[in-house]
Image 1 (tube, rainbow, N blue to C red):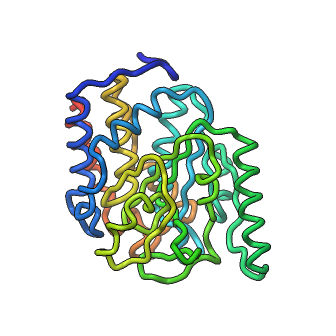
Image 2 (cartoon, one colour):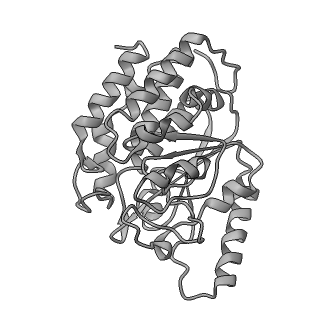
Image 3 (tube, rainbow, N blue to C red):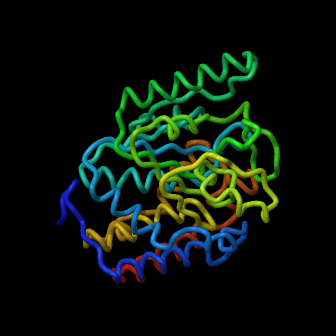
Length: 297
């Protein structure tokens, strides 16, 4: 088995696989991600997997989209999947979360808690607090890579919005400045256009009925459900490293864990075993297809 930090070579077949994975991840197109996929340079899953395979230090994984005073199932499950793989490879992943997600999972994961809902302070004080918080995170961990998955991103007006166009700035963990100040690569995952990193394709998001994020990243991964993008990256990493990481993944158990710890479906707002309104079995099918594409079943 290839060890953490070892150089991983890729072939043209790997690029073909990456594009197959990328197409599968947006095949249903509920929020228009397939519509805007063409503006991304193909091979983004491969490039992301190569970055992950060649690291040797700390990786920050930020997630947690606020819904009804708690957090949605889409995002944390994918973050946990990436966290697990990085641990298996001998890395040092850290989940960066706001409340209540941070407190809910801190006994089972390495967690860095970030302030949320800074309403009541002056705009200047809020901005200074956010910048200081970002600088503290970077100086504490000195990350080699930053990943965000299903995390609200800053719009052009400086606020944060959900898919319905509702301002949720008073509930959000502001993480954009961590990416902007970091001296390491950033990978962002989203499924709607309002997540961190979507600034890479902001001009193409005008066709969608959303208020888009303008914050950019080094590599953007899109999917119909953000958790699926994490599994897609892991499928690509499995191919590169010749180890079936998805075969060892129990998606039902992980989803159940987060539901038991307070998460709700981001579409329905209900505490159910679903991701963006889709039953767990749909994700199981996607994972099975990813394993088939990567040659493990």
